[in-house]
Length: 400
Image (cartoon, rainbow, N blue to C red):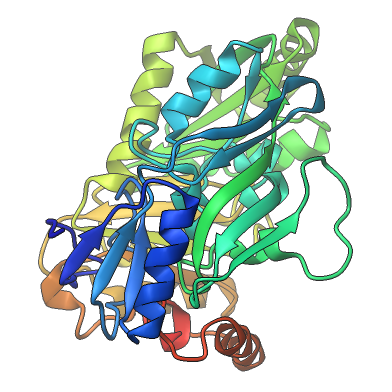
């Protein structure tokens, strides 16, 4: 069937939506036999990520694969099909007081398989890590249509080839993610969010390091600001007594020693911060993710970027060395931004363009330069899984 969908600016000839794993296998096998290029899509929230595919005959949508294959609350694991949305998973897990602590910008649309394939994550990575820390097992359909499985149903060390982690961030270049087994967490007893503000960004610069020095364990630390970092939002989650003690430490000695003001966010204020983050990460024509080693934690990429261009808005995770920025207009200045981040980080930073206007795709590489040894290894893996180069060809880093 035909459908209005594009992958990094390229429109396929056909869009198909298999109803189960066997139909997915048969579709991919037929495309492989006919040597047709194909890509995979879930809820469609990350279709702009990456470079334009070199060829694209068919998009295979996994949004109809929504079964819960196995759920054992006492083991804190669940196995689901790739098309299940985060919103539906949230509803299923909440009944048992559990959660999957991965942040996505649109829980109603984002699917489990899509988030695994793109390695999407947000500020709660500070406490829970990324999909690589939460994935336990996976079933995939290889580009030749063969079904392969890796990992297991319980949390344990994986011996040998770690297929589940290999699929995280693979962007559909190694095959279709069909089912995923995930590690779950209990919903915290309580959650409190503190907002730290100061008239100058310099006053907040030492606070992230102070959180570590005081041995606090925040669920997330995020800074917000249009052109400078002037608001730091720190969230703690866990037992009531533990959260209360950590909040008290932030108020004194941390806030007192650094001369910053502290207030506790209301539910509406917390929702407003989340909405601002979603706006930056999902609503602009240009969207970028900047990364740098968080050493010291307060040294974050936006500082460099803002010296040459006022940002439309930015959110940063200072203890992770990650920042997101967005901009609407014909020219973002990606080369200048990459140069600024390189200069601020001694060449250890990187800028990924997560979305851009179609008119810019011929001039802008979505990916930063890759380490030659790492790129050679990735190409070898790609050749092993997809020797004919049919699965999302050219969309990933280095033209993979």
